[in-house]
Image (cartoon, rainbow, N blue to C red; front, side, top):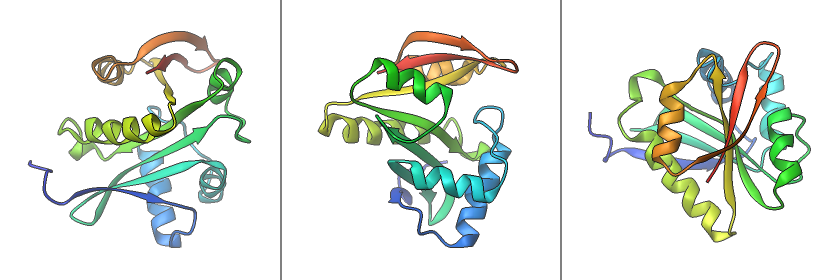
Length: 167
């Protein structure tokens, strides 16, 4: 499928329709454990309220994904975010990126990361994220390596493990 025509990355804030908010939440839940599960639509809305930058990924005006990012010193309680907040003065943290399964491996992620590279470059920010190592998300690890990310740490949790990556 050629996504070059009809593909858009759109910044958004919390003022979404309740239907769009619910669709984003359901898309998040469909993509666990690659992204963390969230307990409710209200909790997802709270995450958006705290975030620094949110992106909708659309193809022909249909929602196919989203990105939620945080800057340093945000009031975000994620232990993964806190890892970067302790060691970096300025950064853009990708908390979650979700692309519907039937749009994966078509260049969507690469285009989104190019967009994030441009945003980060304006403020001389490093881009930070984590990827599951248990359960292993090898496709994501390969993608991040291909896009210039390097591993700078790892952490084991009770039910999963992650690798911390920086570009």
